[in-house]
Image (cartoon, rainbow, N blue to C red; front, side):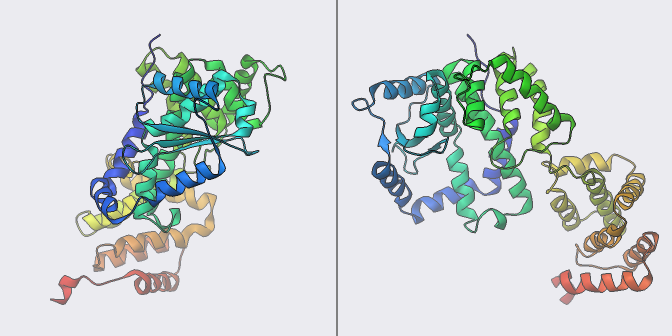
Length: 403
């Protein structure tokens, strides 16, 4: 049977974009020579000291299963497999830092007890999929550049890395399917992981699980549901692996996956998000054009604000600039004020931040600010107080002005 490519184009694009943005080649070179191999030693100590290694002598059948999955996926790098005593229904993998040293795959005992053989193959394949997709390496790179944690990352990078982490799970699920070749096993393992119940023993049919999943998925596609966290919500994962197993071509799969990816790409379920995105783009463009052109600093300021809600903010900007910017601006303002009348000062604040983004404040820009402020229903005094606060908080004169 011919299988489709397990890679997901959007995930690969994000992975490469994040790696390049963080200067991965340079950082990895520096990291290689400034750090020791304590990470591998700590993982080895933790696993050999507190878990049971799956080897040919002690657990021959399980060892053979793991090796069969590894061979089926064509992964020839060394891997050590472990079982850890835990009531948590989980498994994980971690790539070794030192080239040539075995990677780690760990299965918790509660999960092992819950799964049948094909389901176990699916889980082992999923974890090996993370290793084959080089997920640990990207996470390690991000952690090295931002040792302070997730909240210290720029908003744009944080958003894209969150998306990449969800998408990598869908890729790993595809490797899980390739490892067992059994869609039913992938579906039941998904539901067992989600519920903690032995659905086979309960007599639950896979067809009923898939039908129930379709019902639940409708909320996420048509009801505004969102998928947050490091893993996609389970209805997305189940539907995605069903599509991977049943689609006949890459083109068919890509088209069928689009509604699922749109759920993951949502920044939230707030009805103000769409008009706010349009406002940020159009107000930014109008404010930047007052002095004749959209300067680099101004464009980057707009894109930075859009990055919290758009995975490709530059593409959104290009689309906006091809439209009637002024009309879109007016409509977005009206929509936002209709939904939240108290938002007026916040809208003007963004425009003020745009005005000072290039570190120059010209008379026509000032006139524009007061004109827009009054159209928003603010008094001259209120506009002036907000203008003063923005100058004191954000304004920094251009060094060229001091020559």
